[in-house]
Amino acid sequence: MNKTLIIAEAGVNHNGDINLAKKLIDVASNAGVDYVKFQTFNSKKLVSKNAEKAKYQKENTKTNSSSQLEMLQKLELTKEMHLELIRHCKEQNIKFLSTGFDLDSLDFLDKLNIDLFKIPSGEITNLPYLRKIGSFGKPIIISTGMADLKEIEDAINVILNAGALKSSITVLHCNTEYPTPMQDVNLNAMHTIKQSFDVPIGYSDHTLGIEIPIAAVALGATVIEKHFTLDKNMEGPDHKASLEPHELKDMVTSIRNIEKAMGHGIKEPSNSEIKNKPIARKSIIAKTTIKKGEIFSEKNITIKRPGTGISPMLWDKVIGQKSSKDYLEDDII
Image (cartoon, rainbow, N blue to C red; front, side, top):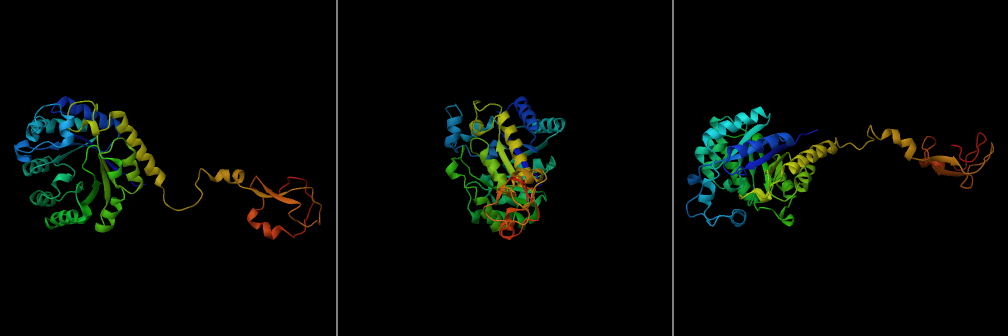
């Protein structure tokens, strides 16, 4: 059974509050995910002062300002906060992860010795950024929201040329709309990515609910990433497109069930159903009283349960044979 890597994306849903961030870690640990992921950035290095918020960010933040910079400055995690969150993750037996959004943040995360690097969709065309991540020599997960195949190919080539091994790269299909409309999910694009680049695939989900990541696992996703929050009604850019604690737990349970259900692919009776074969299948049965020496015909034999006698697949061979003994009605031949 292949185990799906599940990343619970806390992102900036801590609203800049270390205590909220710790509660998010507790929720992720309780849900049974593999990683809880935050975001590491210096706002002034991430956006210019003239960058406007996305439409969904304007709708989900109740401030009058349209500035991304002003919004993000309130959501930064300090270096000390990172260390405190890593300690809390260890206490809760869950792995810490964070996405860096600028070169200095990548260096900082590398010094923290995180397990892997996650490239967000917005950085897939950032050559210096990709080159730096490729140089770290660690596993890499790339989200591909808003990207076409050529852009994915270019990003992979930059990473490989910087020293990364192809075997270390996993590519996630993604749609960068919060929430993503169902008609725009395009789950089959995962297969296109796999066929095009021969890499493990996954899905980073921004739809409402949990059915799409579950379906993605059934289609072969090896990594699932999903935003979560303590409460969808909290103020902040990503809360509304995030799962609440009970939904996150349900998603993990469902994914683990799907993993078991995928099986080995050989079509054969399972251990649990073998006992039901004689009950559910049928045998050739005496339709009427049959005397020894009588010829079996459609008039004196029929097919009924149980399946402990001669298989009905041998019907043509039984018809025309002489009975070797007497039978009462409903006796198995």
